Length: 216
Length: 291
Image (tube, rainbow over all chains, first blue to last red; front, top):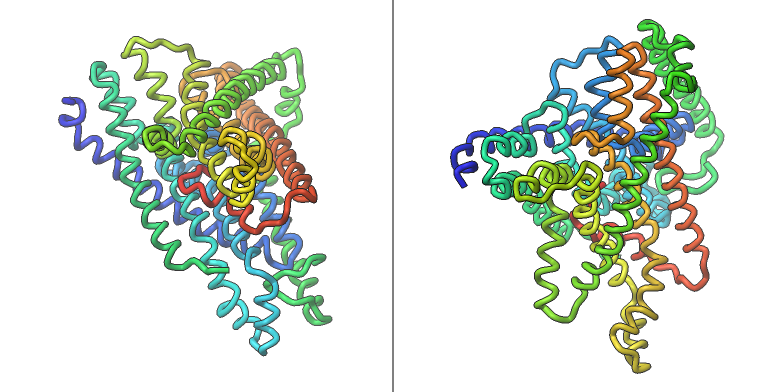
């Protein structure tokens, strides 16, 4: 157990890196994903096509490949990212945006057309229909899938270990060489770090979901 | 604008004109993005025909080694797929067991493996197990890691699929005097498989994508092979090789996703499957699912 007690500060630093990487990438993913979803449901075919192209490309490319491009391919184009961490935020954010887009879009599509028809029938304007009737219902259905995307993203941030980011997984791979006897404890330490993020997130989502669920 | 959408009405003349204007602006924006990318590529001489030609030049050995690497990727993926489906089915059966003594430990196993990152598992198998006296080669390190993670995810998909079948079905089975195993085998599983197929295939696509983590431990799958070709030929062909790797991944995954969509359509067309809006939530029931 020495491996963990002696290196608590290393674990803590790794944990903070994982959290900040996830939060920043989440911000990128959420804003870009929502924008893309807006593209995909807009009445403008070129924007729809752009959104669909983005989603299909990033959903079918492994995150490792996206990350790899940020680190190894961009320099070939004379585009230099300031640090590995920024490359990580971009890779994780751009990749996850595709999944955010699909969740948000399915949320919008899950609102039945009758809702909007009823809203128009009682004389609400377009803006009112959208803000008072459609979007509130869409956001509610979107909570569980977005939560899954977030949890998956936290776990995906571990790939940063392969691209020079010292987050939780990288901490374990470093310590393994110094403390060969404590293998299980070392990896368990990192695993606990992830579970500390994902399990409360899952519970919180469950609460939010029960609060906002629409009974149909 | 063929199907009606919840967001806007069927458009009138003014709306159609606005859409035409918006479409024009959209085309210009998209073209501008494309033009900027092409300009950027051209500015760094990435568009030279000779640089791309290497991908099709069998004398350079590049197409052959990428082909072999694709073989390695698919081999790891298929073995992991089969193993995780089989073990996942057993785990799902365990989670649906009537005996708490079976249910509880299986539950712990599933939640644990689903909750931690796949790469951590792969590192544990690759770096950790040898210290405990278990030595696996690169291929099996990757496959065992992939299986450990995906069996848990698939177990949850299977369980959610079985639970999504209307209770009347199993009640009817019991009423006819079938035993539990018979109800499962003859009544629930055949219906559940239909319903789960899209979720299963999309998880298999994820698994296939995750074989790229072999890159991290040095297994010669597509990405690692691409990297080593570039190290061998020099950065001159870097972008071209990397793009080729990405395109191969996208092509393989897209065809699998299209298969999933086709299966989805086929099953929803089947008259035996009554439309049930809840069926779409099968995936949402799995709380810790990975993309």
